[in-house]
Image (cartoon, rainbow, N blue to C red):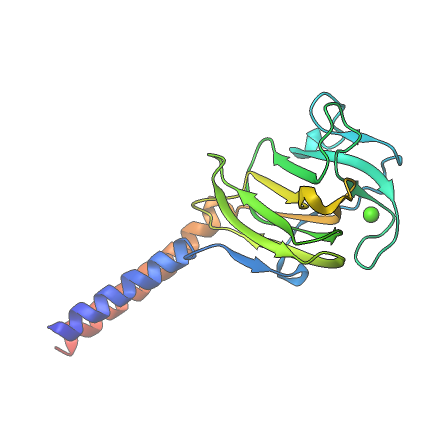
Length: 209
Ligand SMILES: [Ca+2]
C-alpha cells in the first residue's frame, strides 16, 4: 500500500512539474526556443525610448526605456540601449523593458555593465513582484536570461547599474530576446502526458499489488 501511495504521489509530482516548472532560473542565449530579437539596428542613434516618446515596437507589444547609441563591445553590436539618462525625466543607471499585451516565459539580453560593483538583471511578474534577479560584475559583458514559469510569467525586466558607479549611461543592453508563454494547447499536451503516466502507474499498482 505504501508503495502504491508513493508511486501515485510521484506521478502527481511529475504532472505538476510538467505543467509548471518549479522555479525561475538563469539561462543562456542558446536556451531560447523561438524568440523575438531586438538589435535596435533600425533606430537612429539618439532616439529616446520610454514613456512620453513614440514606441516603434508597440505593434510587437514591447516598450523599452533607454537611449539609443552605438558602439561595439563583445555581445553589444552597433546600436543598442544605453540607460535613459537623457530622457525626460532622466533615468540614469537603468534600461527597462515592459510587455504591453502578452507576458513572456523567457527574457534575456547582452548586458554591458560598467562601473564599480555589480549591475543587476531583474524580472518582474504582473504584480510587480520580483521573479528573479541576477548580478553582472562591473566592467564585463555577458548574456543573462531569465526563465520563469508559465504560471508566473514575466511582464517586465530591468537592467540596473549601481547609482554609485559614476557611469550614468550604463548599463548598455543589446540583443534582447523574448520567448512567449507556450500556447495552452502545448501545456495541455504536457498535462496529458503526465496524466497518462499517472494512469499507467495506477494500472500497474492494480495488477501487481
Ligand atoms: Ca545592436
